[in-house]
Image: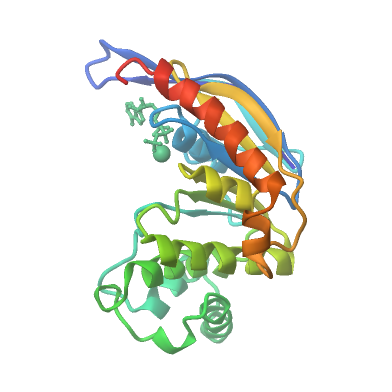
Length: 261
Ligand SMILES: Nc1ncnc2c1ncn2[C@@H]1O[C@H](COP(=O)(O)OP(=O)(O)OP(=O)(O)O)[C@@H](O)[C@H]1O
Ligand SMILES: [Mg+2]
């Protein structure tokens, strides 16, 4: 379980003359094994909160607790998938997935096994020897996911992982992610700008508002699972459409309220 307790975060400019309040007093509990999405206008602090929850940034105020321990830095059971693929161009797909395991000091034979499994999980077993520049955007994103999965995390933090993909590949990736998630139900915190993506994937959609970044709604998405076996039926169901419309309405209010909109 992830517990975000009264988290606020201020960014201070290099010359210390400007203070920007990115997050204000956010409290959330995320149950283990659930899929939760963060949705909200640009600049409302979604990435900041994800990085705080993962231990990459220390919040100005408040605390994050995961499984009864206070987060004070990154840990191997928490993996992050970034929007930018962040692959090392001089390493093959295999080499990229292997990288965090090398850093952890895992022995070569075990590493080989783990990497082979992670590449197979994302459907790229035949592409291990390809370099990033030889892979499509969707494949690079899958390598990023395989790299995150290879460390066997209990918690997966994903920051707009499909944002750069074309719409068809994006839908395929959503289905693959749902299939993968159904097989082991890790705790996933997923940032997206897509209302449909958030509703389709999530057990809960947390909506954020800006200036300062804060939680404005917490919506339980009780659509049936699995959702990948007949995604069309899910996406055309009255319940899905109702969730999507309700969330859109709230989001539009936030966008209108943005200072520079
Ligand atoms: N390193 C930084 N230094 C100063 N300000 C920052 C820094 N990182 C983020 N900010 C500011 O904090 C606010 C929240 O940023 P954040 O990246 O968390 O937003 P976001 O919700 O992820 O936005 P987007 O949807 O565009 O990715 C923004 O106004 C941004 O300008
Ligand atoms: Mg962001």
